[in-house]
Image (tube, rainbow, N blue to C red):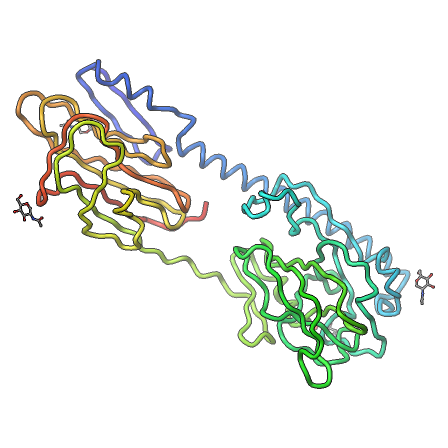
Length: 404
Ligand SMILES: *[C@@H]1O[C@H](CO)[C@@H](O)[C@H](O)[C@H]1NC(C)=O
Ligand SMILES: *[C@@H]1O[C@H](CO)[C@@H](O)[C@H](O)[C@H]1NC(C)=O
Ligand SMILES: *[C@@H]1O[C@H](CO)[C@@H](O)[C@H](O)[C@H]1NC(C)=O
Ligand SMILES: *[C@@H]1O[C@H](CO)[C@@H](O)[C@H](O)[C@H]1NC(C)=O
């Protein structure tokens, strides 16, 4: 008598008592602790820690930059900003370059293919009070005189701010023709997008069509812009004073506006997801079948199971529970394995003598990332079913959505 206990991060404990010693050797071959979801979980935690550390570095640098800016300002009142000419913009206290190491990067994917650093962490701070939409001044600036290079993040007296997504009255933002972003800001999952720019003049919100810029939404409710020389003088990139509130949004919130004028923080909606499936195989199976092509579908809420491939694919990250069964159809050992992300994680094993038949149902619960695959393999033996018996079954449910 040999007892085998397999523990999968405290969620599932399978204890198997197997009488025939010769049958279990392969189990150890298939079992590799390093491959298990626990490791994945830890990796996620480490990544999260890294990203927090990284955020801390960013905050610290920002704080240092701000205090430096403040000592500068005590000698020179901030309102003289507008009198600064644009060549001094390059060395002025409001121009701070962030070049941080990337190890805390969240690894969103799109920036990894090309080796260019993530602009969310490599940007220049652009903090000019005169860029604000409520700034009316006779002094006129022209952003065409600036040697734009790389990515910029807008600030208003040290507070994060965004470009306007609406037409701005002329003679604002410290210039004649204020530039605003057409088509709004992107979402984080959009990555880097290109947006058109318009400049308001003579009651025409887009009389000046300036060259498009690239924009990216970053984690933490802010945006970076890849500014370029505007089409003419005097045009300048604007900062919408109404979006100051966005800098106060929490991580679990987004900054929204219906009219592009009034902005507010709103709690992100939880993803509602109903994922349930129950499928069966309507005939007997004998020997090795790499993937059981369950084809009788009773439930496929959410459409995550594919009868074409026999694979269930997690549509969202979360905690899932699966079950799968067989009915032995002859003397000897029968094994069905649940395969998660190509790892054999749980077996439904039965060993019968003579003409008796056993039905065996196994369950498994795990946390999966979006896109994870789950299927069942018939590794050996014989399983009996006909088109009405529902003895070879596979099913599962999403228990809760959880970001990992
Ligand atoms: C612009 O700034 C530079 C450096 O501060 C200064 O030398 C130059 O005279 C200024 N030009 C104008 C037109 O104010
Ligand atoms: C613009 O708005 C900000 C924030 O509400 C305010 O502090 C500032 O005084 C305003 N500036 C002008 C010129 O009205
Ligand atoms: C059902 O499967 C479990 C897990 O593989 C196994 O321990 C048990 O012996 C099986 N039951 C029968 C009657 O074979
Ligand atoms: C199930 O199998 C029986 C006998 O083989 C057959 O008569 C019947 O038409 C089948 N039913 C379906 C729904 O395929």
